[in-house]
Image 1 (cartoon, rainbow, N blue to C red):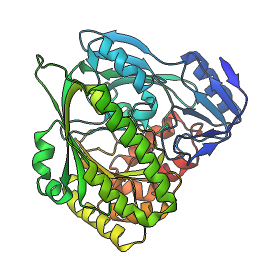
Image 2 (image 1 turned 120 degrees about the horizontal axis):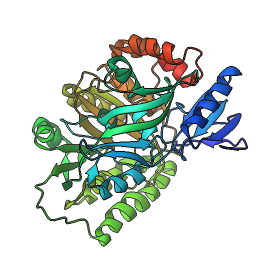
Image 3 (image 1 turned 180 degrees about the horizontal axis):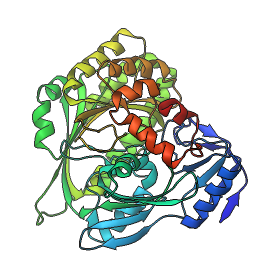
Length: 436
């Protein structure tokens, strides 16, 4: 196992940082257990870190930082069941093509892919689809190293541990491998088009229920939205991906290059933002294409931002968006990023935002050079009026006292934590706040 000299670590959003005492690069599970046991014996804390794509300080440590990159790749494939075991440090962007080469795919995913599989699942990363759960919903087993350096294999045969560990927040142990129930590779037909927000909300139930994957983006200060419908197609359907020219124009030049310039202007001329959003909303054009699922789900995101996302009961969405619109109008805040809205099915994972509830997910963003705090605080207060559950990897202010009221199995999770990490080897300030 290699170690590196201490260097300051910063997350992708540049809103969390740490200077660990030591950085370890384990290559095997045994090396992970050695690090944990040594650190625990000296009272030092340990924290694995993935891609740094969480906006919270969930991966921050002043102790030993574990870089899990060497524990990566596909470790085992069960052709009969479609179960695939991967190293915890496997990046989503590497797993997707590797699965595709095997004729397999994850059943659902979000819209970016730099995350490690352990980081994405431990924080409850999800995609969209009224009948589909988040990425952790596909986990059928995992391996983790406990606070005392023991290796534990988690399966559905132990419903308590299985219920707690699939979204473990990094609080139960170091995840070293995960097994996913994959599905055969599939094509998606993507249909994207601009709509008025009122029309979206007026036809919301039908659009959510009639599409495999439905989401939309609303531009604050306007009544404009971009609607995305992604649906599975029959096996014999021909693949018709976006042309290279259309991809470069829409996804690289407009969504990244031009959008970056718009946000730089917005940092200096805040009063221009409503007009710029109106221009952006009117500039949207419809497009359709058919491609492999992971090519449709994933979009390049190069404009740096900060993000807050809450899960709310699906029925509350129209009221919530109207309240957000009213708050933005009544404040002097300007918001250049669209509000992203997605949907997911209930699950049985104790600390998942989807536990026992069908949700709408509302994500708000602000450019990284603009102070996000007042906007996020104003919107968060609206989410709180509707039993909002924050995404564990995105900015929020809730603590254990509030979160206990949102998660029926909160205390059960705490009991499992007491058993697996009694001396809080994996604790940090963020976990102290959200778990107590």
